[in-house]
Image (cartoon, rainbow, N blue to C red; front, side):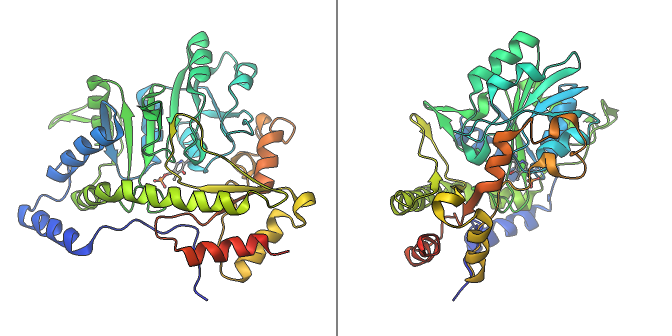
Length: 368
Ligand SMILES: *Cc1c(COP(=O)(O)O)cnc(C)c1O
């Protein structure tokens, strides 16, 4: 039987893409703030309901750049339950990560535990909207305001997510997105930063272009992270079909929930009231005692019949060699995150899953 992968990239129509490539070839303008780059920024700002956005070559460099733009130093409070790039962005800035435990009902940074982790060296909080589930942005902002901290959201999973009609990307000082092939919306490799004002947008645009403010002025040691015209054109085409892709994912989530609701020992998240979800991932949590198999047994059983889940996020970032020596990286400090990491399995989730494939996946989980 054919392999079922955990994700599958949303691809533009090849002929339409070719037509745009022809335009790029004819113009001979292939990168450096070209026509498609400008158009994609404009269309994304409108689609995402954000005032300003700056495109990047991936989702990691905007995190690194946001920290520099806000002059974040010392210690930053962050979540261990994420993709490793979140914490790597701190490492690349010489900042010490301080891990705080997550809330089991969302997998996101637990706002009630932040305050106890603040020291005189703390300058910012870096939360993640894990699986696209919105963080408690209000509670996080309250702590940040009380202690004068910046807030940078790693919103790599949160493309198009809205709470009560407002974009989640407008929370905090800045938010970053990833447009990697595995995400809901992709430009093959790509990413972006969302900011609130024109001045900041200008500064970020300098920083992603070596710090050049004009032909002869370099204002800071910027990096090179400019999105090229080919990826911007690809992104414009994908933007037209991303709503249909999210709708297709919603249907997959609905079937998973219907079919798995009565399986003992398997739990999952429901939609949150007032939230426009993007169904970027479908994590289930395995209670080995009630279910009869451990998460790893289920994962390998599925793999043996070519159904690929992903143990996202396992191991925790705090368990990787770079970070496990940190005082905050212990199991005692992060009991919830460790429990989630030990029991989570992300099921295959993408726009092109067929009913037949979904049946096969559910069959694996229901198998006694
Ligand atoms: C994908 C991802 C990133 C990194 O994005 P890239 O585009 O792969 O550099 C950062 N944080 C989280 C939470 C991610 O899932």
